[in-house]
Amino acid sequence: MTVLSAAMNDALQEQTSWQEALLKDFHRHPELSMREERTRDVIAAQLIKYGYEVHEIGGGVVGVLAGSKGGEGRTVLFRADIDGLPVQEASGLDYASTETQADGDGVEQPTMHACGHDFHITAGLGAAQLLAEHREDWSGTYIALFQPGEEKAAGARSMVAGGVVDAIPTPDVCLGQHVLTDPVAGRVAVTSGPVMSTAASARIVVHGAGSHGSMPHLGVDPVVLASAIVTRIQTLVARELSPADFGVVTVGSLQAGASANIIPDSATMLLNFRAYDEDILERLIEGARRMVRAECEAARSPHEPEIEIYDRYPLTTNDEAAADVVRDGFLAQFGQERVEEMSPVTASEDFSIVPDAFGAPYCYWGVGAYAERRETYPNHSPLWSPDLQPTLGVATEAAVTGALAHLRA
Image (cartoon, rainbow, N blue to C red; front, side):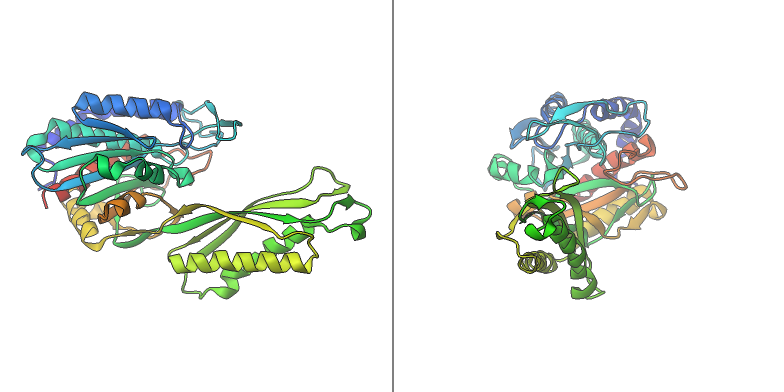
């Protein structure tokens, strides 16, 4: 027996057409983090049409709906993130984005839904409609939360700061999902414990003393200094972490100078740290501070380095009981052959900030995006191009199933 009633299963198939059209519209019109005005307006209009009580909070949209007994019973929150990325799309899809948008610094950027948030929005709206049109199948309260700014770790905090905890009922459990390259399309994956890494980024400026390229002895070369830091900092994982512990340190950007024969007076590096443990993340960050300062001293840098930590993501670690309820629901709805144990993903999420603000347990799972044996491209790639179906249908089905499994628990 499936979790969805026969009527809901039929309705799930019938709404495929409008969902596909809406997803393509979102994909053609992505918006950057914390600048998702059009996206927010479309979501709010859909929720109002379905009969939800709608709130716009902290750049996001929340819809609240009571079930068959006027809200009596459990309260379930399902979250979908809504922002795009500053990526020039090269997917070749006939609904590819050609949009640009000014970022927070006023720089015009190409924009793309290169992480699947267009699927997340559309599946979230599909689930919202199914639950609204079949209230007789459930009791309690359903909260559809659409969050901005996930890609900058800003949106969940913005909604909390905007008063989401006081504006809506307190959920008994919070749910979320992400389309991923693993498992394959048509399948879902869930587990308890860590599922997404904790992460932070750093902006590091090291200072030198400018000079003519032919007279390096009269200056302090920040390019050589930064290069030494890039090499040295890799030993944080290779030589300071146990092989049993996961950690990543990436130098994603190193910028200095503008001419071949001028030694510049500074170099700027952008770093990213990831771990499955908050203590290990702090060890990586503090180790980087130590190495940067030591290399600056060794290079005779005339000024202290500038080190700014930003874009901090919490560890996403699923509550065991919440994950067990979702898993049992998935097994009943999809069958054992389509439900997998989710391996921890090295990417990061700010999803858990909202349930933590409520003091609620949560479960976050994966939905397959690419058919078996098809060439796959990772999230954030300009070539990212999930199979429209069955990905969208399964994501919608998983959202409704996870919610109903808890509403009926």
